[in-house]
Length: 534
Image 1 (cartoon, rainbow, N blue to C red):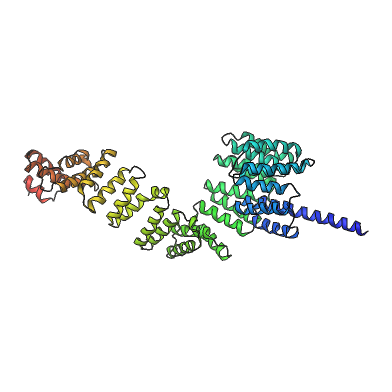
Image 2: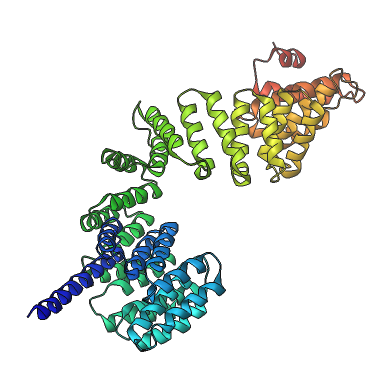
């Protein structure tokens, strides 16, 4: 009787354990990672020498994107259990991720050796290997597909075989997803109540920017299983991408109802931020903060969101406070140039331009990508602040990375003209402007000014050809436009002197330029006197 009781207790314990592990894996698949981790933690505490628990515990972290944490669990799996097959797969996974393929295959072979007589366990081992071949940074799609064919034969009712096969096929040939779609949809033949394959098909259509078909498939998945949370998240992201904000928020709310935890709300917040819904993101980040969920990612989002969603007088201060918290939390190697740029922009909005420009320069110093993006913008800021030397420095730095545009050459020329007053060097910059934009009249204006400064006594009348070009380029009917009038007047006044006083003296031409002046500025006293008008 006692023996029978013990057998029954062992059976009950095994059944409870099986159901609990299944629940933990189900929660992982439903992106309820925090809940799954709690379950796994309880499982390994109850049965600390069972390497299979640590194996799937590592899977949870891996699916969450925490590879280092996954490796810790897989190492633990191998450390505590060398009797089962999956711990050897776990050891092989760690080696494979580390690029030690030969050593990894040795461990995988040991796992195979332990499953010669158990076809279902062998199929489970294959799936464990195939997943790391497909989803880690070290890829081997062909080997994964070869092994999965064996798993399908040995365990034909397991939908994970077909899902992994579809993953490998799609990753291998993303431009031709027909075989992957076929594999995903075959899941329904095994389990008509599983939405997982249909969601993966929808994801393919989403990647192809086919909103209609993707949305259709997500709806199908939700009809198959209305509790499958990833379908709502993916559908929400699709709708957000295509500007269907109301539908997206509805799906997110359903997702949060199914996955009512901080992690899910963080995903929602991130989605709002990525969709540039900054005002809504502020509300969600502040909700997370109130629930003691705060990290440098949330503070980064908050700082930038306050910069973009400037709804009241406190936004800039709140943004600067969030930025300060961000820099207090973030590891140095996780700072990117946008973090400095955000802080700089907030400081400038707060009227602290000098401090803001310091942050922009920090951003530029991060890497070449940042320098290419920001040097032009910051050079303009320095020019506006009349810090011409800094403007020149940044345009010069930019010219070493990319060819300057005509607008950038123009700004550089003006900075040189107004700052160090190196008129020959400024003239060279304006000459490059006109090579790039031959009809740009302000370019001729500044070449004229540079050459006048180099020949202020008019010994060579060096500015003449550039002033002539201005009058040639501006159509008569457009001379009075606000953008044209000042430069036309400047050109004509110089040319009046040139044709009245130079060796090329031509009083008729001088008169023609006085007439242009009078046409666009009837009160000009010099023109009136020259033309005999009282």
